[in-house]
Length: 457
Image (cartoon, rainbow, N blue to C red):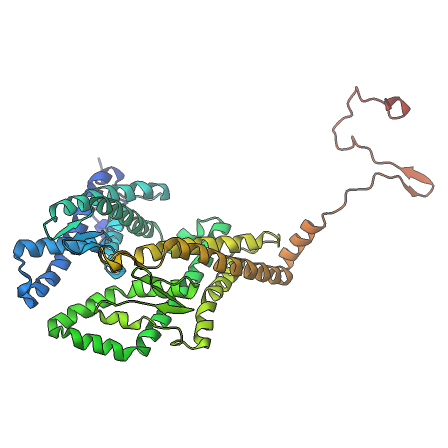
């Protein structure tokens, strides 16, 4: 019996041998622990902000129990859960910036679930995402029931559905990143799917950059109105800091509205209102400084600015189409525009989802309809971005085929396939040569009928 060997000096015991798979924690337990940790950390982050606001505004009449309930409602609002306020109605236009808090925590939780489960296969990622999403949705539902009071009542169906979808998406992406780097995961996709994803990412990047510039430019042009609203509120030092945080949380909403504005349909801020490149018709607005960036009237925007704004979706489609053609060129020139249009369809669906979640009701009165229409934004984005992406993909693919000898040869074979060997007799040196149709067989069949007039019916 040999004695056990001692580890060498400087060796790390944790890397001496691969981990034992049987020692991994059960997936259900890991998912429940991760969901509980995300919920607890989120409440710990938001509760101090509510306490600061409670101290700055002691006339609110809230006790410590009310502070905890308010922090819970704020956490549910960060998960995009609609809340009904007593005397005000439904509040559904929630800041998308707050979604980054639970999204980042769920991202980390998804990575931890995959690593603690010692998963190495991509097909196990779905089970890890469900193990995190199901208990997290249950916790969100429990918080929606526990935080109800006579002042605020979060929606239970929204809490369960929004919590499940957010945990499934953010946790799934975090778990995928734990398996392998993005480049390796990207290479696992089929070439056509990879090209559509790359083109969609390019189109969304152009739209996001253009929407951010449009929103920032409009706010800079109305900086005087912004300062007047801020001075009218007189929030003070603490209140001003909280007001700045709230406005920063609404920046993704503003970018989404600017994108829908560039598409053409625009958005509404109240019933019977519209804000579009062709003009704006608005009613009384809440005293919120960020709303000073909304354009008013029909002559407030120069014509060249409107032309640049309306050209933004087409530019996004051209960029996406070029990326599709570069990622997966095809010798079939007639099929390439279809993949460009598919890029526009996926981009339009993403824009429709963003438009839907960036708006919502702000009460039961005139502000019951705030934000862009999701289905209108999706349809217009598909038409504008899809058509421009299809044209750009077709042109870019044609140029790529002309420059690439291999693609050009494949294109030539596809357009004009080689002719079959001639069956007519060929003459040479006074002899006639015929092609035997049974020449490729090992031996001629015995029952082959003789050639000649006997074969005729």
